[in-house]
Length: 76
Image 1 (cartoon, helix red, strand yellow):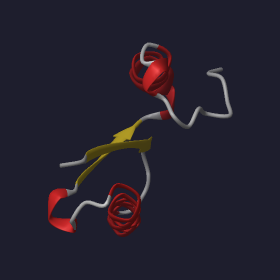
Image 2 (cartoon, rainbow, N blue to C red):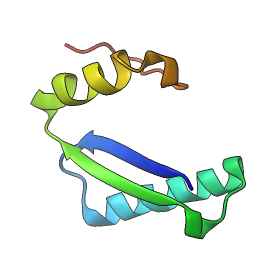
Image 3 (cartoon, helix red, strand yellow):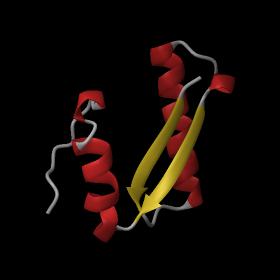
């Protein structure tokens, strides 16, 4: 039962978010061998000024052992 939360800079349209959710779902079906009905995808908007405090530090730095694709940037 994969559940994915995608955090993005605010400003994407609902159509873009739906496409992201659709593509993430397809990737999980292919890579994890799960059914479409078992996948859920949430998308959270994050203001750029809040990214470091609300995403980078708690979700990336503090959980480094869970990050399989590391970002190619460091917070400003």
